[in-house]
Amino acid sequence: MIYEIAEIEVTAGSEAAFEKAVAQASPLFQSAQGYCSMTLNRSTEFPQRYRLVVGWETIEDHMIAFRESEAFLEWRRLASPHFVAPPRVEHVNVVFTATD
Image 1 (cartoon, rainbow, N blue to C red):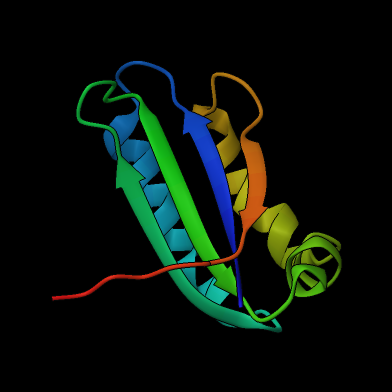
Image 2 (image 1 turned 90 degrees about the vertical axis):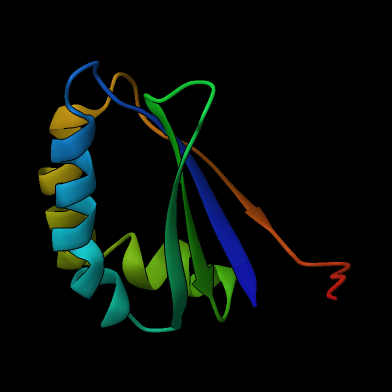
């Protein structure tokens, strides 16, 4: 599994609306090929900064199957009005995990 991490800056005052848009869009991700998980994290120090973390079975599931779908266009329609700039996206693999 890989994780897509999208760093998203939103317009001041639109935080609640952005969070609602992500919640509305979550079924679009959940029904996508290769979808595994999704979390939205908000920065404590910079409350207009979010990190959307989506788990995918493969990078192709994200970059091809999802990004080239109608679901992606709908996600952008819902969320992008709140963006200050396009999200910065990278993909990561878990290489170490420690638990209690």
